[in-house]
Image (cartoon, rainbow, N blue to C red; front, side, top):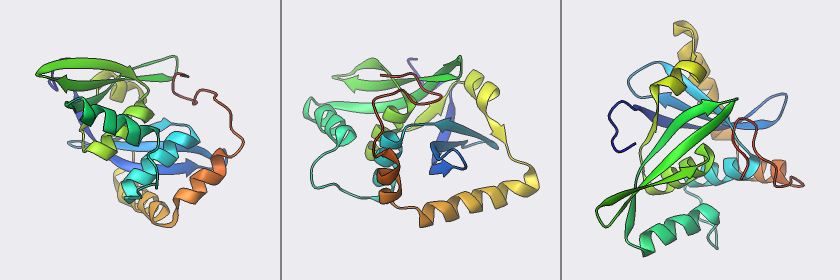
Length: 180
């Protein structure tokens, strides 16, 4: 995707653990609408996103911090993250980089691209088809209540909550995302 045209701008609302499964999700909301896009992610990615959103700086760079450093070191700029499709309950994303004036596209899992985006201030978008298929509308009267409940959860959750969840996990793919 060479431009933002036709894509729907999203805000990263945050990360939460869905009960009773204890499966982390990232919640995105369309900027000019009422749909939310929940994507189930792995505990490692949830930790990476939550730490960046909380402004936590690890003593040594984590994978997504390293990715940002490499992009900066080669003089590139992360331009956009686009969640491009959902096939068989698996989300696909495209990370667009500006490398010396040329736009380069890198296939990515949405959680990894979003973990980078929250570190770099890169805008996040979704293809309309993705939101049509996987977007969720909250009831008008319940929308504010649901978002308030989610924000309250984010205020109480700590990075350690996610670190505890990922202890003992292997390199399996995330539900809703393509494995590495």
